[in-house]
Length: 350
Image (cartoon, rainbow, N blue to C red; front, side, top):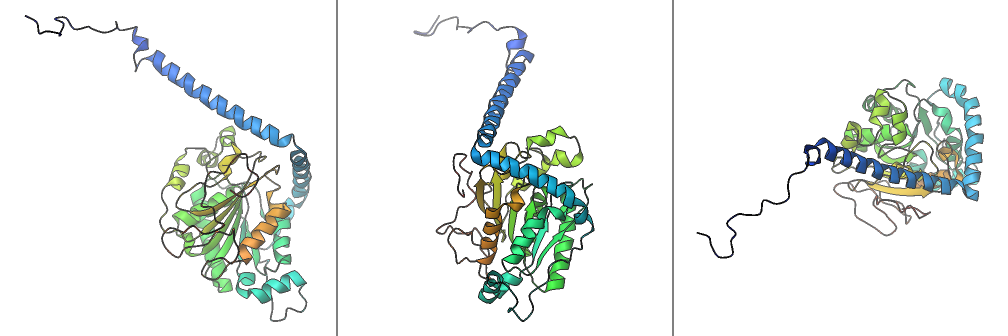
């Protein structure tokens, strides 16, 4: 007996295919892997194409020439960076009559901004000599305490280097009497400083963190050299996942510079910082090489402006400078961009 409309022999469906075609079979797994590889290849092609287009412009060609020239100069300066004393910055005395007009203006207009220490942190296998131009530029603009630190070129762990940075900051605070300082990090130095700020409680000491060409989201160039440190710099590594975790009530504000011609960060947009819990302003540069970031005039000017136009509580007096919140999520104000994904087609702060 059968029920009306119900077949007595249900359709068994399509005949099963070979074992390799099953969802968990080797052939299906191979197809999925091929699909992922194709997607990665397409993405890589797009990124390389974008970098090639950035290079094949007048600005890009000029940037490549500047990068090569500065690289040669930096090689010559490198030995001096190994022997220089950390205590290079001296605060202004009571008299400002001997200062040039720009320095005098900052000291008179905002003595706290002029005196707040600025600590420069270099990148991988580098030293403080990379900041020769930036340090001079900041001091000429009135910042009296611009210092730098060296960490071992044989550093193998970002977390360990961040702990070393914490010690350096505490020493600087004790020496100067300032409870909060600014930090500028180039390349790996920016990542070390970010870990210190977001994972070791460094936001209590760091008012503003500026990063230059820092692989905030990892870089695929780290696959070229197998080591403990480079494994930490790969996209999706344990360190990158830790840095991407929520950060509650971070007081430090971030100013993040990245370039579409950065040959050390791949893809280049991975040097931006899209973290919803951090108050970050991403600035995209066009046609600037990785080593040239600390010597670019617009970067020196931008850093000076960001560090000079701040009230003691972290609020700002200039539109476009990201404010600090004493607690909780930073409110959005006019001129602020809260760490969105930069527009690859743009050429302005994102």
